[in-house]
Amino acid sequence: MSQITKRALEESLKKMLLKKPLNKITISDITSDCGMNRMTFYYHFKDIYDLVEWSCIEDAAKALDGNKTYDTWQQGFLQIFQAVLENKPFITNVYHSVNHEQVEGYLYTITYNLLIGVVEEQAKGLDVSDSDKRFIANFYKYAFVGLMLDWIKKDMREDPINIIDRLSTLINGDIKRALIKYSNTSYHNQIFD
Image (cartoon, rainbow, N blue to C red; front, side, top):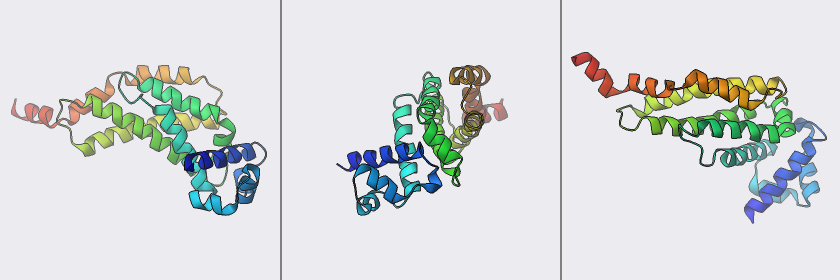
């Protein structure tokens, strides 16, 4: 029942965002639209921004489902673009509101989750520290999110497939090369050769 209630609140928020900016929407607007009381809202969320964050995380989980490998990262990233595009009024409104950091945080989180899966897969058989793996995933995360934020700022006009194709060409094999460079085994072999 909890997920159904959260989804109803999310749908009401998204409907409200078609009519007015996020900073003009109240909890009363949302609860009135979906026929709930304010206490029900506060049972699930501390404020509207908490609902926004939950909504973003849920959409991200659906977008990335099963696409966290080297062979499927392009599909996962495309699905992130598509999730953003499907929620264009929501994302655009939240991004241009007072709290656009939430959209950035959402994108950083889902992109990191995609990339760390790819990095972990590519690191199999290599002696690479967890901190180095996180560093590599974070490096690519900032590049990917930077491209996506630029795309959002330009009103999501460019076809995401073009962006992903260019990105794929640019980084083809680079994650594995970076992991090899960070590999303790590789490092020790270079020193003692």
